[in-house]
Amino acid sequence: MPLGVFMTILLKTTRFKALVYIIFVLTFGLSGCLLGQTNSVSPLSINGFGETSFGVTPNYLAMGGTGIANVDRFSINMFNPAGYMNLDFVTLEMSGAHKSFRHRITDEDIDQANFNTYFDFFGFGFKFNNYFAGSFVITPIAAKGYNISIADSSDDFGLFEYRSSGSGGYDKFNFGLASQPLKWLSIGVNAKYIFGEIDESNKTIIADPGFLSVNNSKQTGISDFTFDFGAQMKFNWAEYRFTAGAVYALGQELNARQINSQYTFINNGVLETAVDTVFYKLEERGQVKLPSSYGMGIGFSKSITNSSISAWDVLVDYNMTHWEEYRSFIPFGGSNPGPTVFNSKRISFGAAMVPAYSLSSLGKSRNYFVLARYRIGAFQETGQYQWDGVGYTTREVNAGISFPVIYRSLAPGEKKASFLNISIGRGQRWDGNSASLREEYWNFNLGVTLNDKWFQKFRYR
Image (cartoon, rainbow, N blue to C red; front, side, top):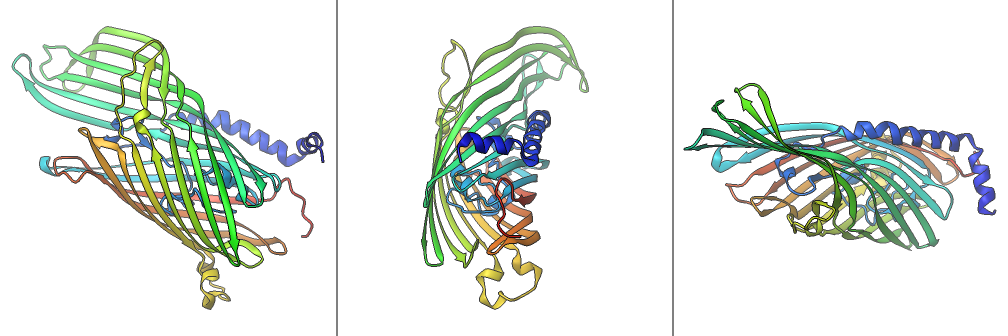
């Protein structure tokens, strides 16, 4: 069928019209909600781009953040755009996250707890035919949420406090497209629209109200596109499948704006009374440079006869992000400040299994829990986060489960399911020095996956 004819028919379908309407509403409706989120309460987010997010569903988080070589017919693969070709259905996914942190500096007897809850993922994935698939996803990408203060004294004006704080974050609309030119090869590309704003301020607060305190603040906003690419190769041997994948993200200079201000105020211990504006610059234009990155992954799975469901999967990923390329804000005509963040390397491991398909003794069981998919994973990352110029190591272990909510057959050899997805992670960021900040945290993610079949005709019911 000529492409023009196919598109004409597609546009006349009720479901496609509904899809266009939903995307329109989500694009302009949820953008305001996302823009207001602060997805971090970590002091470490003071560095660089902030605390970055995987931007994936609990299915992938539970497997240690692996996914470059993952083949999942039910879930949207945000780690590798080539993975969209693995979808069998139109997939709607959404999830939320809750994080609890404990921050400690042993030498200074500091021990504080913080927590945060926020919207984490909303996306559509589409399998148009055997050659093309795509996605539309809204998810956070990075955030800042810190409030750090240091008390000191001076012979000139007595006690004072230096306070640094930051809030806000950046989100992305992801438009993805994948193609499968060969039976064993799929390729894909993501166009990511990055938007949002971060507010940061540095205050010198003098306890004596006879002196003026000073506040310096800046608001940095981004609104521009960037791109990443991916490929997956799949090879089958009898009931086993080997998968290899690779991804690359461009390091790009994004259009940005920044508002700078400085004012003096009187501190009376409770309220700040502004006195005078010393400096104010409205929307200076410039660029924020995001780093390039690449990743590789391999996967090994056992398939089920007459079904594309895997009995079990084992995955390993390696990622490298050139954070030394990152620049927070460079005004047009301004000088390059140089690197402020270290490069990061991450190695991840993940595994999943469905007991009913993996263990022959449970194959005929009618127990609901043997049809659930169980996941475990772990990762270690060095770089990116730092304290006093020393790089941190992040270690995290994860576990999760996907409960089938609706499980039915659409045609012989074909099964459709919707899921309730849960993942839990326990992690630590630290450099091993008792004088440095140690961050321990729990992640809890809850999401749903809904699958249906659009665009394709049924031969059987």
